[in-house]
Image (tube, each protein chain N blue to C red):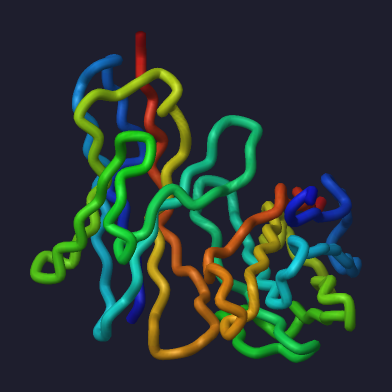
Length: 111
Length: 116
């Protein structure tokens, strides 16, 4: 079965603290992994994807196939990072590129 | 380009009624996917339309149907509404796969459906 698990519903940190949003996936093939973000009163948007291996707004995520994880990290959290974060995967066996989302983690960065 | 647009923004219906939600994709995009996001959950894939045909479907009953028009806009129809259909319905679009454009999906703002 294809599944994405985000174990934390809420993660609260102080400004300047490191952040790690956890994501584990279940998929028998080779998926493509994403992090999507939804800021307050804005639409869902792509933050980063594992194949691009880039850092966006200071966030990075490494795909660990052994642990089937794709945790999102940032060394120093900023207040503007407060948002809802969704981990998602796309099975690459079909061309639909449908997204399978986790239930999301709300990140709250306190001043 | 306004990006992906959806209408209406909010909708209230009663059980047993039927509803139609609309989506206009981002300029240059030809593939439209629909997702249902229940409160406190991540979006769940309903189906995808490409070249006016349903290409793939998630685990949703036949009460959920759709349509894509020649201009690539799309509709989501839900018949015999249940209380459990109350959710945010998201539309996402992307470039043609062979266009050289990004396969990134762009989401609309959603339609909030409440079933009473």
